[in-house]
Length: 215
Image (cartoon, rainbow, N blue to C red; front, side):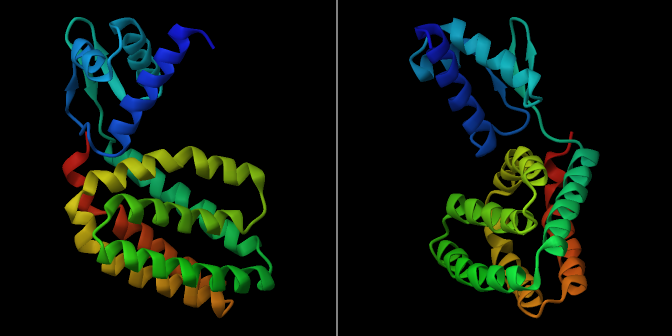
């Protein structure tokens, strides 16, 4: 990798992380010069990084003005919820009874880590634990294609959860309680009950609290 490519990758990773973790909120205008100065880079790699992020749909570049951080449309949020429900429920449905039992045992321990993150009010840790928790349902189906699709959606999920900020902390206890219900249904090998709770859980988490950031 050349020096210019390395600088561009560094700029891309830094700006993208800022968007995903809520540092750069939807509606923020990122100035090319300001971003470059903050990263200690020239404007050329930053320009390349911004164009790449525009191609991925995270920002809109306005020549001579900067780059506007985009939110997600209400339809996109609904579509994301639908996709997650399909991927996660399908994974659990295709797992064996033994696999579901083993997953329930493992995720029960993971929930204790979620409770610890809540007690410490560690939003970043809680979000990463939540994303990994839901990934486990897809992983249970032992299908590399669906797992790849899930991982492609993970950054949008991360973006949405970080956008909630303190509102997410206010809902964490409810999220954990819903996670415990999902694990209980897995442990009982009640696939239909699991799918019903999952549908409500995803709809609630990606529900009205996110309307402030629709575009």
